[in-house]
Image 1: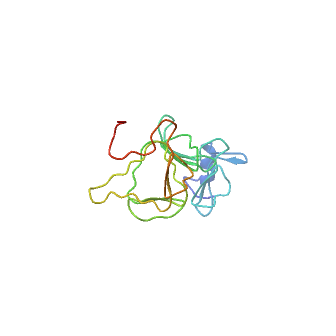
Image 2: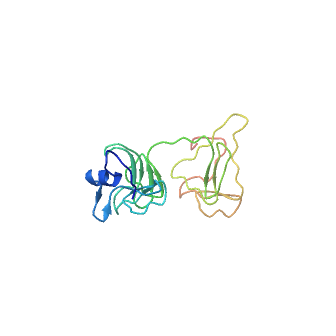
Image 3: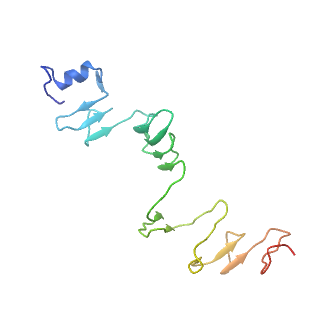
Length: 170
């Protein structure tokens, strides 16, 4: 516990008088090394928070507008009060660098993955007249998840597999 003096009262006594510490279950503790513990009697860092199960460890915002939340499972949510994975973002985002999924990347504007990338709807590739390129390093499957050649097209029944030079059925 931290000892200090404020008009003859120790910090411990002031904290206890304010009701911040209960018998055997401290809500707030400052140890002799200046480390603050919330929900713990043994802070291991300058600020250690140990939330009871089902309660958030840390929130920035309010009960009606949560901007950042760390729950008791260690899941971080930005823009959500209920993160569903280790890192959850609700809303749009903007990165000034690259984004690596399963692989580190430091190249600005690059989205890179060490595994598969699944797109739930449309994939648009755009750029300038001289720099719009789509590189496929292996096989490309359209309408199939198991392409057998460099380009495999598998159309649904009754639809054309491949058309060149027309955007209509005629």
